[in-house]
Length: 175
Ligand SMILES: C[S@@+](CC[C@H](N)C(=O)[O-])C[C@H]1O[C@@H](n2cnc3c(N)ncnc32)[C@H](O)[C@@H]1O
Picture 1 (tube, rainbow, N blue to C red):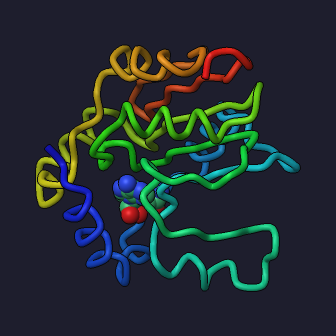
Picture 2: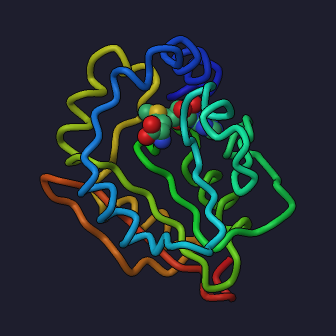
């Protein structure tokens, strides 16, 4: 059972060195953004986007707003065309509540995507180390699809060496 307070403390502690330790594969990120239909002109909510220095990174860019709060219980009072949870899903203490909350923040026809830029096996092995207390693990894509299907119509699923992705759309009636 994950305690959100532990998760906050864990990532606050890692934040100063986070960017230095980041391993990123631009081709995989591009493929994930394609599958998530993230393109110029759409409104995107990047859930659990990361470090506390993010606000500084985007200083002066008035297209970007950085918010710090629990995504499971937030109410932003507006909807988005796309919602993305990248490299963060195992850290949420209550995935059902998370998806209900996020589905309410999705415009009709909007898409929510849960993705990791590596295989399920690799991320779960990685989380067996120091992060075990703050990770519930990444479930098989079938399990995550079933959870997401309570709120959205799931239509894209990938689980291979390069990435893990489950994506669904709000069709106007399923929230
Ligand atoms: C592994 S980091 C990934 C950060 C970023 N997406 C990236 O790829 O660099 C996981 C992130 O999830 C965030 N997080 C965990 N639980 C959260 C919650 N309940 N609400 C909002 N963010 C959360 C943490 O603060 C952390 O920034």
